[in-house]
Image (cartoon, rainbow, N blue to C red; front, side):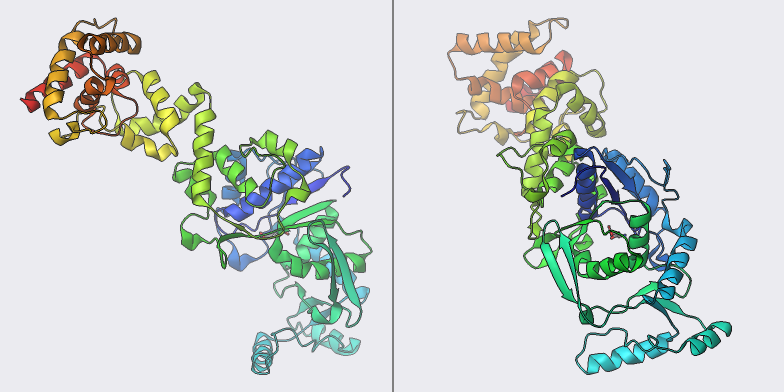
Length: 486
Ligand code: GLU
């Protein structure tokens, strides 16, 4: 594969929010450009007015920026090939469609929608795949002129050779040969003067000097027609890399119906953005070694096209969550803290607690940011709890032993001053008591955990909880625990 002066493009049709399949295409496209010191271009393909969704282009920009996939040229940043929005380039497509008519590689088609419906119905009844029946392909020039003079609505269609074959190469799938007779005379320019995607993408990819086209596998079957267009214009065709689809299971594509196919859904579900990118990169690309955790820069370093998969990949939510958890575990403490604070604040309005201890205990135990609010819901007020929580087989505790333990703990904790109230001192005091009593750690610490949180599952144990919620609140809760037990 040629790798000098690479120019890749991500060319979304802004028809809604960003599906992770599209985001993955954008990611690979970006990575390939950056890996070889090339340029990554963003082009908005909005010529299909029927599918147009207001605000969708904005969602594309935001998603790419949130992911760090900054483009070198594109609608908002401009560039030498502007404009980068297809609806602002319509004159260009018309000009090139007319050139193809002149060279005999396209023709005006005046067939009405009604006629086409009938033809397609008949084809279906005959067991043939519906396609244009080439009715207008050989109209004589006078007839065409008359129809045009009468302002008869028309489309412009590609005149695909009826014989021979088209051969092209895909970097992943190798050489592909298709008999031309199997290709339909697709529409290039629609009645409203807008180009079809199939035409506009070829024109723009050429005019924007795109060298490598990375896109979904679903476009592989149209690529011979694109290649014929390149040939008709006498242009060099680009390097194609068609990437396989993401599936929910062996036979279903991952779709919106699965409730989690969109980038925004994952962010909302509590995923860390670099972890989302990391996981989707692995969905369809295998690194050489064992490592599975990659930042964007590392992906750029490690990526190679031959690691791309030739078969569809199955989306694995468990794996994605594990990768997210690993990202959170490896993150510098301060970064984790700033990211989780908003989630802590959802359920914890106090600001006099020891956030450092809290965040440190949360970090190794968090899979998703959204796990957090539920983990900190005991801090502001002690939830109601049942004394049965004191039963713990492993710790050999029961409500009776808990009463004893808490009574021993109370004076020990009272002995620590407000200024001296920190994790280290609490730890030292409680462990001295454990030693003095000659009991197992859990015998003393389990009751402290329950009395301080009213829960069995908490971020951290008795020592950390006491440090987090502070002296006064800890002593109150221990006293309350004793009262509840006797
Ligand atoms: N506009 C097409 C889409 O959104 C892009 C396909 C391509 O990259 O050529 O699917």
